[in-house]
Amino acid sequence: MRYTETQVEQIRVELTEAMNKVLAKYDSKVNIGSITYGETLSAKFTAARTSENEHGEYTNTKEAIEFKRRAKGLGLKENVLNEKCHYNGDVYVVQGYKSRSRKYPIMFRKNGDPYVASVEFMKTFVRAERPELFL
Image (cartoon, rainbow, N blue to C red; front, side, top):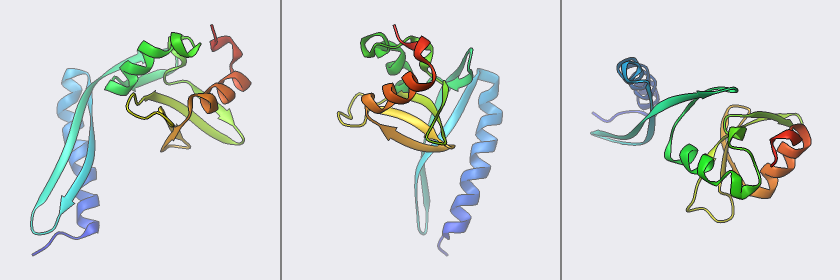
């Protein structure tokens, strides 16, 4: 019997909840990535420690660490990470920097959904709302 798409989404939710309970002991959170399914089910996941800054708690993913490393070179303060900014009626939260992406390296959550953008786009909306975050 094959797994259905509905079952896989429910499994994703339940796995995330269960794994986060275990990882909470280690100040970590899980991200379940791609899931392939049919007769069997295979999932990829990543666990990362959580950190906190003045903007709240965030997961210390490799992209978040890379953003903190590159922030000064981008002309920004390190604490832009996890910053919430409003731009054209949308809420953006800076999540990280994808070093392998040349055109759209900045990772956001836009109204809660994953989103990528150029460095110039990020600077535009951060400068509009929070100019003090620039060096």
